[in-house]
Image 1 (cartoon, helix red, strand yellow):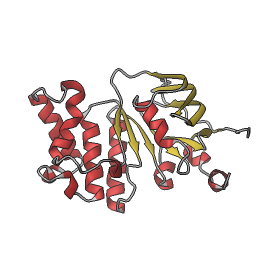
Image 2 (cartoon, helix red, strand yellow):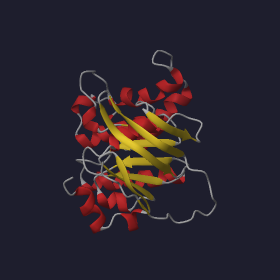
Image 3 (cartoon, rainbow, N blue to C red):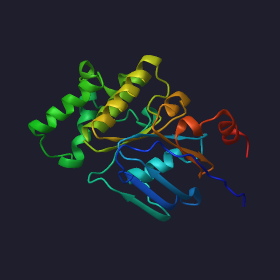
Image 4 (cartoon, rainbow, N blue to C red):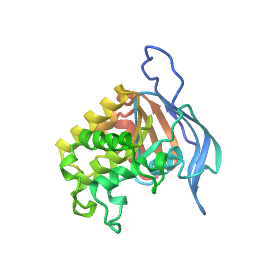
Length: 247
């Protein structure tokens, strides 16, 4: 069994110490007959952007699923300090076109956690949906079918659905993949604004520029944690070469 060496890079000290938003201890998870994550010990700092970085198959999406509560750990512990369920935003390609949903209906689904799918929306619910759509610049797309959207428009719709949940923990799986530079910059600016508003953000990404501008980074390979800390020091050329080299 290959020994994994975890590089620990200290994060800048916060102005006031605060407990992490999420702490995982000896966390393992996966699927029937296919273990993915192996004995992870990670901390997600509160009120910060954390980037999950690693090759395809390294366990980024599985870790997001565990943090979101949609995948149960096979061992270990996970502790949340927040009082609301996380909001999970999948990749735009993971959402099918089978249901004839409009953009607004898709964003409204973000309110189901509080209302359930069959209860009538309140004025506050409608205002929350309106604000989420406005923040992502998709108000003019409200009546469009989800299947008619471009990849960037669909991704913004899914992020708006996440915002409509009003969670203080937003989990994003490759939020800027396939988007043009303007759309990527818009989402990056939004995530920074959300942190200032009291939201903790975790995003899996292959965009090293976005990862290096994050506040913290978790570096994964083959389901193992091989580094965590300040991305500016962690995501060096030599470290990334080791992560992406063949096993």
